[in-house]
Image (cartoon, rainbow, N blue to C red; front, side, top):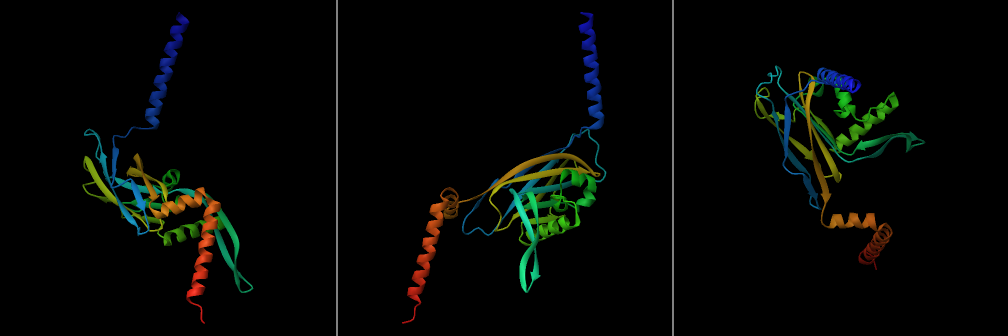
Length: 263
């Protein structure tokens, strides 16, 4: 009996010590994020030219918590479906442009928008940004000069197509960022060529260079109408779809030759 009681006392002391250490190492923050999206589902049809989703958020904190001297900062990162991407560099050989070197990027977002209320480096240090994988510069970090060149080309090309963006002034505080309940909003731009699939919306709250809270939401982008029918047919009946497409192309060519032939 005495042995069991002694073991119980040791277990309680050990559990108390762990709780104290956890409390010291990971201090609890009183802030929390509340999010609301204008829509969680975007429908794409033949007349789709792009869309803008509105994200509203609120920072709620306890009345007894201390006021943040520098106010709050917000980083919203929207990530689209991931896939393997190969970036190639072309070189001119004997007067012809050919593919030379290439670099593969695994699990790469097909869409990424990084929206904040100020430049990311003014919100948090580079180590924290890298650890949290926030920002285009932190996407798929690859060591080596050649890999950096390919990564920069990947970011540049997707930025030109509107699929990547980093805007340090996209988040606006509606109320004072030092108030007890702080409201903010931002707009998530979706170009006409946005890939279909599931998107993750991660919102992080910062103050004085430290990450305080994080909240996530989701967006689904789907095709509807005739576009969805064609996509399903190509995916589920690949052979028949290929034969039908070839037949239509041959028929179109024959009709064109008949209509525009010269007697």
